[in-house]
Amino acid sequence: MFQPNNLKKRVSENQPSLGMWIALTEPAIAEIAGHAGYDFVIIDLEHGMADMKDAVQMMRVLAAFDTTAMVRVPGHDPDFLKRILDAGAQTLMVPMVETPDQARAIVSACRYPPLGRRGYAAPGVRASGFGKSADYVERAADELFIALQIESVQGVENAAEIAAVEGVDMIFIGAADLSGDMGMLAQTSRPEVVEQITKCVASVKSVGKPLGTIPRSDRSNIELIEDGFVVVTGSVDVGMLRNSANSEVEFFKRR
Image 1 (cartoon, rainbow, N blue to C red):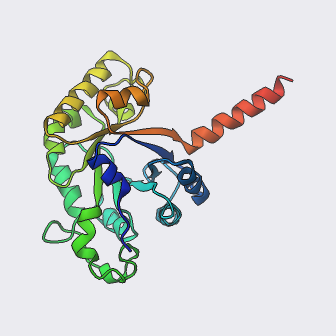
Image 2 (cartoon, one colour):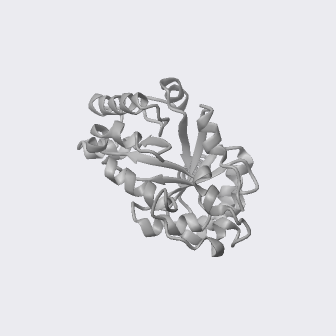
């Protein structure tokens, strides 16, 4: 059954939005994020341990909240894009987009004809309420939100053209992989990396598309919002648990 895409609405209204990364497989983590009031969570199927069944369970949990489930897919595979959309995802993050042709292919894989090439099985998939929503095909594109990650120098060079592709809703700058592509892995505050980020921001803004990114050692989430980003991310569940556990053990051992 259709649910309003709260993140898409927030971005269209230029409301700053904070998300949490989920790399583990436990739906209760998504539930905690919903109770905490995050605007969205990123169910990470690129680097995280979750699979499609885990993602569906998390989407079910988040349906009780205003927290949007954003699924980061492993890559550009149109068959996977089709399957995760059939499973009920409305908001996707797609990694490592470097050319406008890639962007067009991704959008096409996510939309039914005549807008795209998404395969049809609407009457029997979770996204349509297993056929309950008779108008699912007509409305699917309205609630779809596609965020493409620019994470390389080539992507930065093509940022304006990528962002301008119809159906691309947001550009998300992956600063860590961008720094790696430049031979400076995880050194996101290096002037050379910041220069590329600044260039990407200007290119995307030139075509009027919104921007998202991660905090960096030199820029907090608040500062990034002031820089013009509308979507930013907070912590990852693994890091939250690790840091809390390490602190507790270290405090105990200092007794």
